[in-house]
Length: 86
Image (cartoon, rainbow, N blue to C red; front, side, top):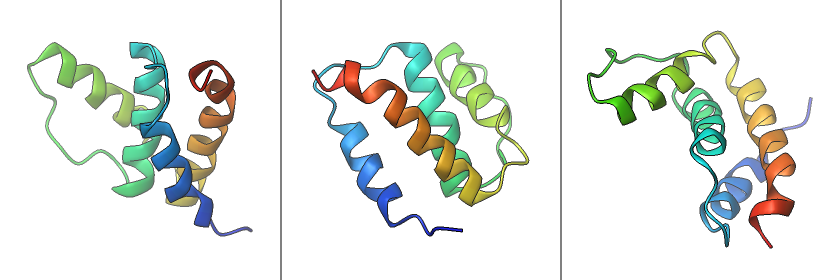
């Protein structure tokens, strides 16, 4: 299976989109990013609504391997890049 040298590149590109992703799009990126870089969610559920949304996005990816999470992140990038890079 391929390594993911491009994962870090894709993360940098995603940070520099010309257009901001919607909240839902951001959370999709965020969940896979946290799973790919930290692994399964390892924090308590926060009270704050904004933080709770991020927590749930990450927690929903539990069980994915780091490599799978990176692959999914790259797929999410490919899905949204045309719209967000215009």
